[in-house]
Image 1: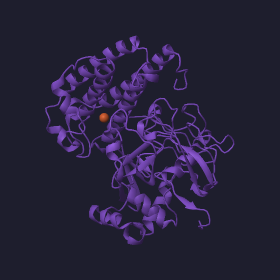
Image 2: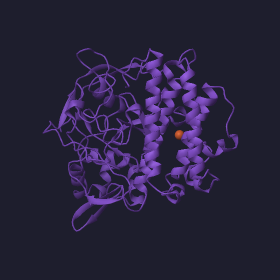
Image 3: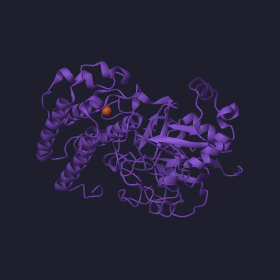
Length: 440
Ligand SMILES: [Fe+2]
């Protein structure tokens, strides 16, 4: 669907409706899996109650589509401040007079009905928010991003498992440990991806020296070697800020891991299980990823290196939308969309390989890069500064590629995510790199 002919308004309308429906089905699954008491509870001070996300999804849809695009009056102006993410930090949200679950559901449902009417009548051109259905695409991505946030809340929630999904595919046979990305310029970012967000624009040329990149993300088995070698006890591997945080927070292993009887166990969506050695390591902070890389005699890739490895096609000289080409992600390419509730083993998805031979760049785990979150040369905030620009600066590190929890509509080779270097409740992992001429 995502590669449909978007120049035909009827096709574009159908694509938008399909994406909005897919997002709402997932929201329904995530909020319907628990009872009302669970929906209003705060499962972690890091997260909102699920019922906040639900009404916030409806509120943003109303704000952008019904009011900004459709010119309609606010439906319930008194609730706007409750669902403004910048007015109330997550820890405060449970104490707000939030809409109870039945009213939050009814509000989101009512908004959606009106949005579908608006979509049916919209020319999908003639204004920047309308061109190529941008605002509709932005809202479908927004809902899917909150679905990922709600899945994180599910992971943090205590109690028995309420979600289920089939296991991901097996590894695709042995792969070389690393791939060489030759020196030269490539096109980073995009001017043509219709639903790309402001921070992915504009396209610009970046010239990089050659480098080596791990073919696959760092596995649990490799990460356990770092732990067993005393990696968490040796300040040599940590930045000063990382060491301070490691010490203050008492970090000894990835989040959700426990040690029992000489074995590492993890809690995953309410189930405790042995840590699978061949899965990409998950729930590590930037500080931990960076320390592991130093211990391994390597480093995290820069954001530009990551994108070049994922998109640059040395034959055509152009950058692809995805590692495997321009066609949208299918189940053979990448582990996306909460189809599975875990990353696939390292080496899976051979059909998703990039031109340089790297695998699983898209899907499975978000990958920390060494880069701070900044605007590209010529960046222009649009349609609102609070989407990206207010986060630019050295406080945030960029993550790339998307996890198993990311929907295809909110995932592409140019997509950028960012978070604090201490964060690890997110579905974060990493791979490492080295300069050419530095011994492996
Ligand atoms: Fe939001």
